Length: 429
Image (cartoon, rainbow, N blue to C red; front, top):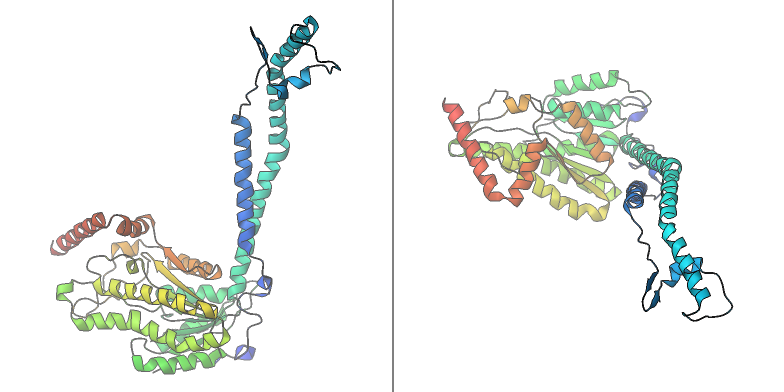
């Protein structure tokens, strides 16, 4: 049911050069501090400029009234001469000095305005611009360090990819291989796995040491094959750093016409198989207190579309299971990431099953216009490097639909009912 291809050279059964985190990140210094500090300085600098340009200082005046002078000592003192006596208000000399101080004080706002303008010009020309450029530089440095962390996280890590013979799984194999990962490729077709392994072994990535992949062929929908396949996977390198549960099957059909066997078939491949493989490999990760489990779900794991019932149900179950798993294995320092892509330009709809279990064999327009699997694979690599918990890789409208389902469920249900009517009408026309 399954077979493993050995790796030649010194790659076999050797520990990675460093832990997943990489030597660069052995120091416990959170890079988010650098990012937050740069953003704080940038925002505060902009606010500082805004305040200086809009703030108008109110100068309090000294008023002479019939009852005598009413003064603000803080503003009057600089304009009054120091005296060793305290004359009364009726003293002519005192009143003359007071009036002179008042005139000088009335001229003060003009001088202050001119001074503020000159200070503002000086600050904006000599201080603010370098500060802003410095913030941009720090932010760029943070992005560079983040990219290096992503590369260090995957380099020499043992990465298991299911469903690696086609579609997104095949592109993930290429992207992770180019990043220096030690791959274990899994799928049902042993010949396709060997072909992919030879292709990757012949490719070379610049500045990164690549490794010839292992291949383990088994059917994820066969519960009896999971335990043996997990044992073969662990024998490849002795451990698993990253498990990417990618294998899956789609479905098209009406609920009333769908056989329960079709529902079970979709659930076996999309839910029970990944769950069983994860459980089989999880104890080894817990013993090492290191590992990363990735579930390739779907945007339909968060919202349900008509005529996709079995597929949406399996992805909802996947989302729920791995959310629970994340909470339970946090104490063992194991990461769990759920990736929810939108439409991807693959053969997923072509290979989908219908209500009677037959092959759908049609490329949907939405699938044909979906994102490139190469781009999605690169986004998955970046999400792992950043240790993200839950990632939605969808366009604007599907992403908005997720929030609409929560904030305005009544409107969402009406839209889905309208979509069902349109699809039903298009099928009968």
